[in-house]
Image 1: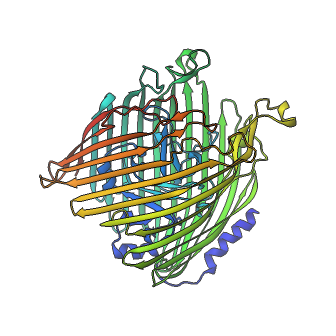
Image 2: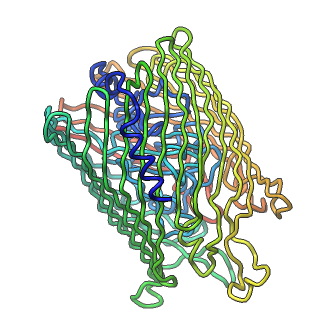
Image 3: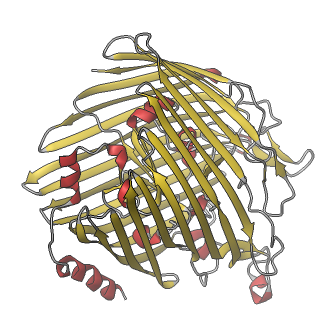
Length: 632
């Protein structure tokens, strides 16, 4: 099978006819703004307006306006996105896209997959991923495993390190609960090379993770990241990216005696992450090729001082990949083909589980057409071969038609799958006969302009059907002899459907307003299941985000406000525990002091709203922060 996949990938490199110029060259020539370009749709640079998929992009200017180093604050501006957090800053933060589980969203940092392969669900914890140092955030809503393979059921989140033209940048802020966030970076850009490196530190006393607790749970993180492009000879260069983060998170544990539930405990977790990606890229007049190697390591150790100095639990996971991807043809005007192949190695071990490994190989191809009548179309297929469950095919297609005065209609169909995690396959509760989780998603929309245009209007209808969802099931049959508490099985079915509305306007060059509304109905459809007909946990039916920014006539003083309103939802699959809805407001301001220095400040949760996104876990009340940015 692996030989078959290799032949597919190799044949794609030599079979398609040359037709025109590489899309990257065209984009540079037209001076397209970075926030108008996306990589999550097809795996390589593409204009957002040329894809039929639902994609939102937040650029560097908008990130600066938001101010917050919390990535969750950034993402809640976007339609289809809901977030939950286990208590204090740094606590586990999950992203639910259009009702998909937080473990069914693929997360990329500078093109590197950063899922925790040692965790039971194999998802990504956004609590330790800072927005500081980022220059771009992209969110694709809908299944797209044709391009990205496993995990891309609900969508794809890609964040990119900030580009720094030439010089030094730095920022620092201080605020409530002794919170400190500092970031600095240096970069250079020339015709033959460019690079940017940033580093930062975050510390906060935090709040009690237990909603009823009094002991504060703090968070501390050192981090560094960067990326570079170096030209070797004409049309050939080296791409490099890397990230390091060392975090310590204090958290609360459960009491299995009265009062039961989450209580103050002295527990904490040390988390270390390493990731890197490097490769060669060829960019010609009609062909672009990149071959790269990437890895992501995550080590986690939990401690409870009441039980000594040794870890109470430790887990290590590694994901490493060899990748080949390319573009042949003219992606802006005419026929083109995008293709890729990769081989991945995963391994994990925990305090209770010996080291286990798995391998997979894949190949995919997307045929596209960009017509001169405003019609863009793309369709393709992918095959994955996994050492645990065998082969899996996925398909997808999308189209966009710009028909009149900036208006376009778009539609997409995508299939997704998520491979069983190593824990689900090989732990004491695992089953090596598991199949992948699978999904089919559909959406159709009409849109005028983009998020950063003078006028933006969008309406999107969506639906996703998921099956073979993996859940922990009670023990049955002969397996009870070795697993008396149960095991993981493909037992679940679900449907999520609804619509999204986006509005944006720049009334004057100095005044900008944006709004996003999502209606979501996510339902458990497991045949004869205990929770059949129930709403999926932590998926609010209604969510609204509104932001307003105004540059005043007073020496460049900028004022802004954000409002986030979320309806109630159930905290559990059985629909026994209800989470009330809430409304949060933020006020922001910034003032340039000189051409190099800017002061800023914000107040979050202005009304001091008391709310929970996870039952039993506390959330921060009113918080104020002040800071400064500098560029030299």
